[in-house]
Structure formats: C-alpha cells, structure tokens
Length: 378
Image (cartoon, rainbow, N blue to C red; front, top):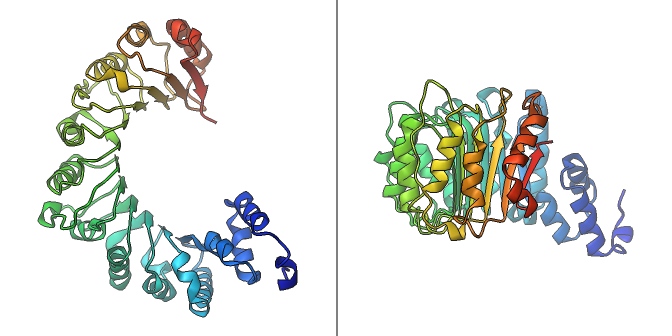
C-alpha cells in the first residue's frame, strides 16, 4: 500500500497532516501503523501515542487483537516508549487476555491512564498488580477513574501516589466499604493542578478529601470540578479553603430538589478565581437564589472573567427571578466579566424559546455589551 520508494518522497509535514486529519479514525490509524512500516519515527510516535485497551465483543477478538499488538511491540521495541496514554474500558475476568498482562509489563513511559466501567476487585490479581506497578514506575501525570467499582482504598492510594501526578479525576468511583483510605497516606510530594470529584457517596467524599488535604497536595490546585450536594458541603468547602490562593476555575454540578433546601457554598477564600461554571440537573425555585448567594460570596470579583450555566433538565419552566441574577451581574461588582453564557441541553423543554427570550430580556445590558449569550448543546 505504501512502498518505501513512495513514502520516502512524501514530506513529513504531509504525513503528519494526514494523521492529524484522521486522529479520531482509529481504524485508519491502526491500519497505517500495521501495514505501512516505512513511516518515519515522528509519525510512528503519533500513531502509538494512545493505546486503547477497550474490550471487544468476544474473547476471541480480544485475544487476537492483543496478541497482534504484543507481537508488534516485541518485534519493534522502539515503539514502546511512544505509548504515553493508556485507556482501559470494560475489563472483566472473562475478557482479559494474558496478552494484555504481557503488554502492561512492556510499558514504562506512560503519562496518562484512564479506567472506565471496571469492577476492580474481580480483575485477575496479576492484572491489578501489573497496573499498580506500571503506575509506580511511570512518570504518571494524569489518572482518571470513571465508574470504577469496589476498588480497594489501598490500591487507589498506591496507584495515585506518584510524584508527577497533576490531574486526578474520580467520577463515580466506589471504594470498598470497609476501608478508610487514610490508612495509606500519600508518601510522595504530589502537587495536583486538576481535581474532578463527581457522583461519589458522602462517606467516600469525606475520606478522599481528608486524604488529599492531609497529603498536602492541593496548595497549587488550579481547576476543581465536583458534584455538589448539601450533605458534602463541609468537605467541598475544605477543598476550596486549602487551594484558595491558586484556584482559577470551579465547576459545580448539582441537582436541586424541593425536598432538600440548599446550603450555601462560599467562594470567599478563592482570591484568584477566573471562571465559575454551574451545571444544574433540576431547576427549582431555590436555584437562582442559591446561585446569587454563591456569586456574592466571592470576595475578589475583579479577577472573575467567565460565568457559565449549563441547564440539562427536561423539566424547565420560565424562571421568574432571573432579574435578581441580572442585577448582580450588570452592576459594578464584576468589572472584569467578559462572558456570561447559558447552555441548554438539546431537549431541555418545549418552553425553551420562551426561556431564552426571558433570559435575554433580563440580561439586556449584558446582551448589548456582547457579554451575555444563550446557546444549545448540539
């Protein structure tokens, strides 16, 4: 398909452009990496940067795929250091081939690892050990655990305790109920810049926050994203407090229920905040007063440039108190404000046109300044 005589005539810029244009077409990239051995090294590095260990439909498919990949890496060991990003999806005891274990033992230059939809305790023990060892011997900067169930606190502590870790994402993580992660304190001098905590039980949130605070790895935190609910307010308030001088972006997701009156979450300590994003699942009459109080708690408004409100509920009504928020944002309190955006989900409500009209009417001064806009998620 690509003979050496042909590719030797192609400039590297053209090869790179072809790869860039197909960066999401993994089948094309994989075909190129296997068939066209004459690619020069920069292109090979781009092809092998991200290794997706998602499981196929059948055991036979998994075995064949990982066996071929293992053969490629052992036949061409120069490719191994190119693999810096690793993804694991839907690993189960019955679909985890031995070849995966062999591949994990080859890797040593991984910078980013993401796990998704994994029942941790049911993985073969040698696979769990291989993943832990890989995290500890690599210069890992990004660790993501999404929908990982029944993970031992000890294992989380061991794979996260790497000195280069700057990004920790824990959406919908379930730790073993009987364990307290505080029993395994962080030993390395970690400095996190990004932290994501979504859909985690209250008791687990409390343990993880205490573990991170006591590990002294949050003093330089820049971006914080969490799923807020009233019972965990003290833990999230503690997070904001210890990272107050460095925190630049806060993203808050919440579901407001009529049966659960909101408690205020204060941003008073955050002196460097540039952006606030709020995602609301169920927009009740308590939401706008809560949002106004949240913004009023910010004591350094001259640094705030962006406010984004994501509304994803399908049960919207035209709010009757947006004027309270408009008066706050159109006044002199936030002189540096450059963007106020309301983003609605694709199927928010049949009342969406009326809601957008009401918002643009309430924020007419910001609309005139080009600061306010409404958009719809595609």
